[in-house]
Image 1: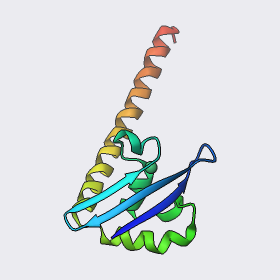
Image 2 (image 1 turned 180 degrees about the vertical axis):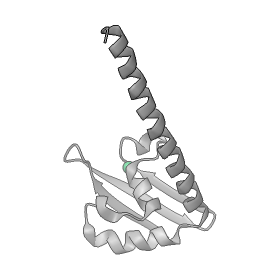
Image 3 (image 1 turned 90 degrees about the horizontal axis):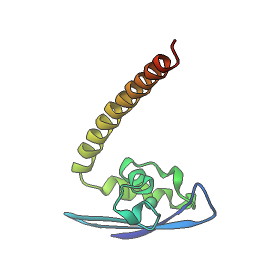
Length: 111
Ligand SMILES: [Zn+2]
């Protein structure tokens, strides 16, 4: 099963094509956006894994998009759960860094 989805850039008028090919044991998502071209998990590929069609340019593609999402095999949901956990940890650490930097600035300013 192969489908192409179109997304609009959030920062320009550019559009990006994402090719999804689902062969059992060989799932491929290739996105033409700048992040997708650099072996980065872009928000478009992530939106398919999460089943969120809100970024699609043509909302008429939403049903097909969700159908493909449901055809993605199970390991993806485990991987997404792990990603979610790591993102939560990362947010916690970022907050600690921010707090620590503020403390350093306060000391530098003699407060
Ligand atoms: Zn992308």
